[in-house]
Length: 406
Image (cartoon, rainbow, N blue to C red; front, side, top):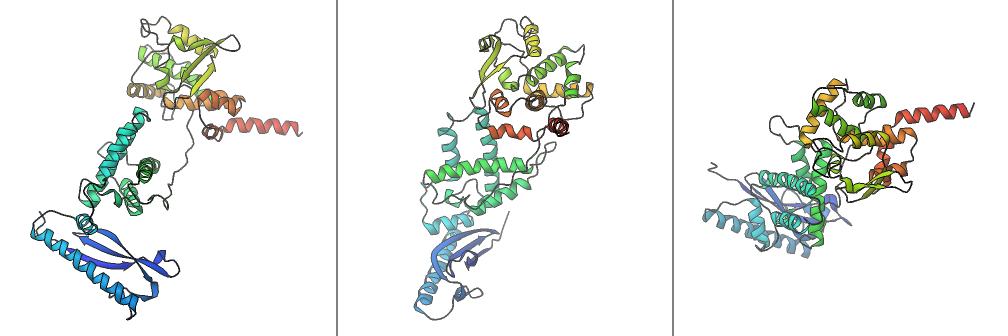
């Protein structure tokens, strides 16, 4: 237990943000190594500030007024510190700041923002999205406790310094044994969720300004991994006496030729089958993730799978078109399939959707606008991500161009 404490008061000028050579004055309160800055709502000429003496140089009227105010601020802060010490109350530099500013206990805190966000917006967000927010919020609260020594902070302390500190906290976070470190893009996802919460607080007028005005996320673009035609063919031809592997293979191939995600395949029933504009069988459903409607003609290989599972023991007695397996087990079984098929890539079920977008459609000359509709994308830019990775298609198109040019 700490038996001694440290406390200091420092006045400083934010010269880097000077306008017309005048800059804001701040007081920094540091207690046991934890510091907070308080804006004094005063400005002075940059050249008039004495950094060593922490006051305005000279004897002008402005200098005397500001220096008198700085003395008053010092006395008030030190008195707050003395009172808290005498009362033997556990406190932090944040406590001193709140008392100095006369912060009302009713002013929203960070936990208030979390509660408001999760309660009021729950009906607008998918349960999986809410779950992702809760994971991010856990990291936010862990950071607050580590940085401020308290379980919660006044929401007005959600500023640029908080954001940059949270970013460093995520990048240096030491996960439990067996869990991967937080990568750059994952850290940016947590920060983007914080950004949306901060934007909500700003619109609610719980904070005076948007703390993200000067902050830019740094996402590293990665190419989507997919299967080549040869790799997909090896999976299609997989033979095994292990029934669960065959079921997983079929589900994966079904996704490769429809582009439907695993969660949406699990929701497909006979009600999603209908005769399309061409009089042939189509599938129609809404993506659970976005609520976007997609319609797609059924390819022959998909039709074969639908016939196979129409009276299969895993679907009999239900309206489901395809069997249901837990996603966790599914990806585990896909690792076995990858080994059997000599596929070195990290085979996950979502790779089937990428394979549909690249190997099955774009590589075979299907227009991007059509692929976007089949995938249920709300923006064409989302589909364009796949176009960058279809190198085989680029090669074939160039070869045809060479022939035409003689």
